[in-house]
Length: 230
Image 1 (cartoon, rainbow, N blue to C red):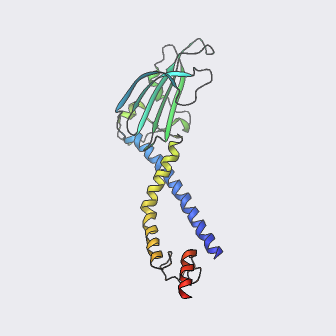
Image 2: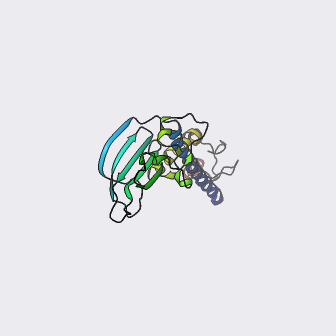
Image 3: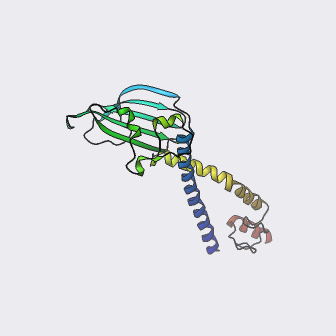
């Protein structure tokens, strides 16, 4: 009986872990799909002053910046810039950060670029800076039909945005469970109501384990049936 319950707990834990892993994979796939096939920006935010940088910037940069945002239901794109501080080189005329976030229902993945501009550099193209590592994004597939987002970023996000990534992973794991595990859970409930083993459907006796497949039976079911035979 103890061994059967241990196997049951192991199976439950294994299924939970697999659901979380699959939920994370679907989460990343959806975030990338938002970049590849999502619509262009449907809402633009006017320049706002004194906004925090979206991601970490060098310590000598100003603490706040001017910011412009474009967004739709699946993506958010930010341009932030500020004047140089006294600690920076005299050749620096502007510090710039660009970031793009994607995901549904919450933003869960992002990429970013930041650099200190010298005179004569057009910071509007910072989003097209080539990636230096996988953290800077992956190129969109060459077979993908170009969308308006390609004009803003030709890269897929590769960095996790918390807590949206956690929420989305649980959300998609729940959907996967409803699709693939829900019918089996309903079947087990129906078998329990009929006095059958939830694993194989064999009628339950007074034994604490199923006499057909050896699966551990709920204590309440075994106790209830034992009382009927007294």
